[in-house]
Length: 275
Image 1 (cartoon, helix red, strand yellow):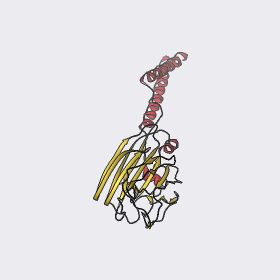
Image 2 (image 1 turned 30 degrees about the vertical axis):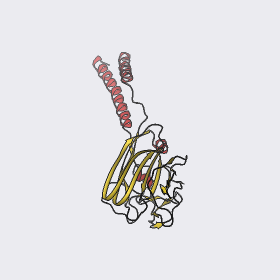
Image 3 (image 1 turned 90 degrees about the vertical axis):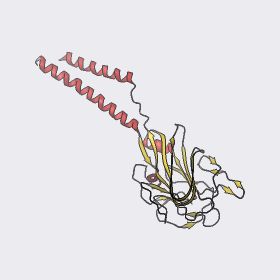
Image 4 (image 1 turned 45 degrees about the horizontal axis):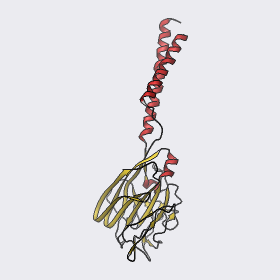
């Protein structure tokens, strides 16, 4: 084999090794960018990537799956109901003010409670439809994108740990918009029982963006809509609700990258000498 052919093959080997390294770095950086999970899709029985069923939802009475729409019904207030959905810890019908005192409301299977929620509904016919991937029965809106139907009063707690385990990575942020087609509704967002956002809506076509970061220790994300004592016409929704998972895959440090490149060059040179 001539020297020119040997040099050509050696050069191709080095280029090949560097190409593999480039693909590896690109893949790692792509993973590092994370994945955005849609919470409406999760409510519809999906895993957050779009495989949920439109219109499906979670039964407020027993935590099971529902499909058919329903109008008025009676739900036990401030009773946390475990969900059959693997990514939803549970649901509840919140009533923040019972009599003249503020209620402590359980919002997780571990017993986390919240207070300072506004007056809800109690007694007969205190609820309207279940929580859905899409608008509730009879609810209209002009908002674009996926929505969680949460006609007040509604409460839902998502399990971030379950999402992380299924998809891999770490929940790093949330971006959720409170939306009211019309009516008087209070919106709350809690992380592990700590209030992170609050909005008061009165009127029509109102939007309030709730966004923030999540820590590695955070587990439960809770969304609450409160009707202030009357659920008539409270067309409330959570619009474009997402949680972003950032990959925990380690992207090599610059020093590590240099070592890898030197190693690749060494392999190429050794191959060349053997020729």
